[in-house]
Amino acid sequence: MSNKPVRVRFAPSPTGPLHMGGVRTALYNYLFAKKNNGTFILRIEDTDQTRFVEGTQEYIIDALNWCGISPDEGPGIAGNHGPYIQSERKSMYPKYAEELIEKGWAYYAFDTAEELDAMREQAKSMKMPNWQYNSITRSSMKNSLTLPADDVNARIANGEPYVIRFKMPRNTDVRFEDVIRGWVVVNTNNLDDKVLYKSDGMPTYHLANIVDDHTMEISHVIRGEEWLPSAPLHVLLYEAFGWDCPKFAHLPLLLRPDGNGKLSKRDGDRLGFPVFPTDWTTSEGELYSGYREKGYFPGAFINMLAFLGWNPGTPQEIFSLDELVASFSLERVAKAGAKFDAEKTRWFQQQYLRATSDEILADELALLIDGNYDKTFLTAVCRLMKERATFISDIPKEGDYFFTEPREYDEKTLRKKWKEDTTEIMSSWSNKLATLEQFSTENIEQSFKQYLEDINKGIGAVLPAFRLLLTGKGMGPSMFEICALLGKEESIQRMDKGIVKIQELIK
Image (cartoon, rainbow, N blue to C red; front, top):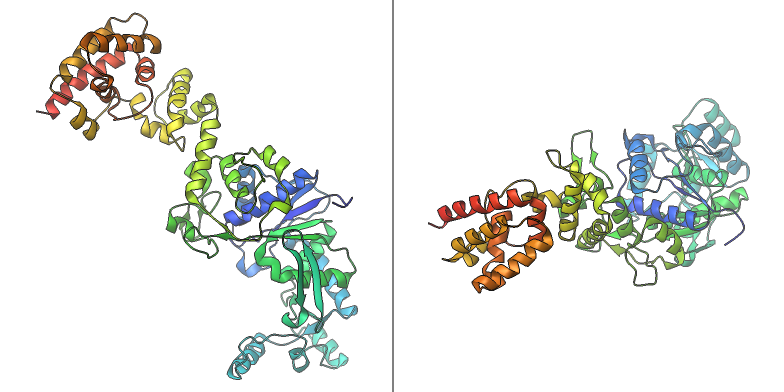
């Protein structure tokens, strides 16, 4: 690592909601920055105004905050390198484009969209389907390299639309070292003269990206693999300006769980899992589900994302955000695409739920249920149920019997475990429970064991029916703890009413 302060940026375009692949890019930038006592910056790259989607900037900021990876600098956050929205930096880009022209690294191009389309069609008819505006074809196009200087100046003075293109050198190897991929070498004969400045007065991604990274003193560019083809141009732009190039790290793609294609925005709800951090509703009213609204803990979501392309080199799988910061390194990020696993994501959620204190879960549970329940009671419910739950919402769903008496009884258990003498056994057991002065878990369990001895029955002849009467279920947590938690009056009342109901069912 150089002595240059670590400054990294996450630079999404506000063209739609933040895909989980984008969140992973933000996460890796955040982890790298914090690991190296650096700065994590959010920059909104909205140079393509035609694809701007209302509300996405706010969505991106809200999603990052929910994930716990809030930027140190960015829109609405103090920083000395703003503005952090590219459209607000519009006035600074023309001088850089002009500088490239003066240095011979760029040129004005006056070709209209219709003329370019006609050229592509002509090339296609000549069996050249991948026509490019490049070091060979530029000589036959309408630009400042082929037109007289007076003509060029007159066109500009008359307000004729133009773009500024990068003058890609011919047959030159561009070399750069990627932290993840090693040395990358690309020959410029495979590259075209990209537009740097558009006729609408806005820079393209390429120019704005380089200028912003330089002026914001970005030390490392950590971004998705899809930007790897643009890296040679960016390296040449740094060279053209005479600026130091940041270190590059191109992250592997996130792949579909059912194939090798890239995980897309539409895959999630189609395959039954979210691909966005939070819910997103389109202007047409179409809802894309998010992890937050599905009940995932932000820590579980982040833990899952960290492992999609990175591994710590140890067996540890459950990490807090601080532990991820301590363990993270770009050198342990894989080159190959990472296949998303929805079941593994649920597993991370389960582990986080179980590791969460019962008291915190009780506060969340109180928001999901009707009625005012004592915090001690809800805490005990969470303690009993969280090993059997994936989401907090599973607790009142699977443990509904803590809040209301059973309305129906598990048919399989009733059929297999309710014998001819079960009614008599349960009535007798109910009477024995009524004699207990201290209705504690230990006393109920001790009394139950003694009752089995008294009637000379095995546990299987009594416990399933006992559970059925109190909960309506065939399985669950300790019956003695459930019984103690429900209390003496409620437990005996459920048993007595349940016996009557079941007798009617089995007639």
